[in-house]
Image (cartoon, rainbow, N blue to C red):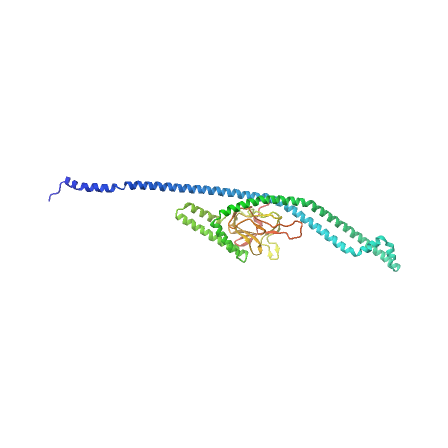
Length: 420
């Protein structure tokens, strides 16, 4: 069988080859469209990265500004504490002078009560001594005995009169000192009020900014605080707060993992930051390197009860401070406000999550300046003590502070930094 000539085969196959080539050459326009899509995606990605970078820069600026304002509030609270120290000194002097005056008044009243029945006799003897003795019928021996008794009585009355004069002198001196001290106390209170008003303005501005920027984390913290408020004991309340914190930390961890799987870097970073802040808030307590000096004194004034001192309920599990009127209370540690409300017999109560399983508990406040979920630094104002009248007889209010680790009270004294 004869094979067809090669030229004939080419002639037969050429149209098919040309058609095939033409068919595969058509996607060129699609390749161009794909390139445009790639460039558009790259531009969108670049815009997204730029937006994330800009958002991070804005967030960094906002964080830096908030830190600056926080430091301003801490500085204002330190200046206010200086004026509160002056008020505390003046109030203590006023209390001492008033106590001395009350003591002198009490002694005067007692001496006057003792001498009152003898006043008619004293007056008659001073006017008619011989006639008084001769007017009473008696034997010479009895008259002599009466003279001796009157001599002894006279000496006793002279002693009593001298003591009476000394008590009166002490009363006059105390009254004069109180009169001299009153303007000093008034000036100290006025200076304190002026500083406090400026700090209140700063706190009000901060609370408004925080209200506008309230986050889901704040809502979770409020839920935990509401659960703690239903607890029967402080220890149970702390356990509820810690359980809520751990649950929120686990939630943040899950959100970070989900964002990583979805390639959402910004969301992942934010979740990781929230997780870290819940695990160990900025400025939180640590036993590494020693505990000394990590706690700021919570209020101006003097400590009136130390840890372990005897009380009606047993050894004290915290410290008690006597503070000047309307004294500002500051956070003793950095961390996060876990509770800020009334609680059982504690009255107005603030609990600060200091990190590492530590909580600072503050009670005895009149007014709260902190909100649940709010981050705080050591020395930042969180509340105000009640007002009271220096020199009065009423009971002076006291601030009570406990430091607890895993729910158990520990002595805060070694943690306190030295004054000044």
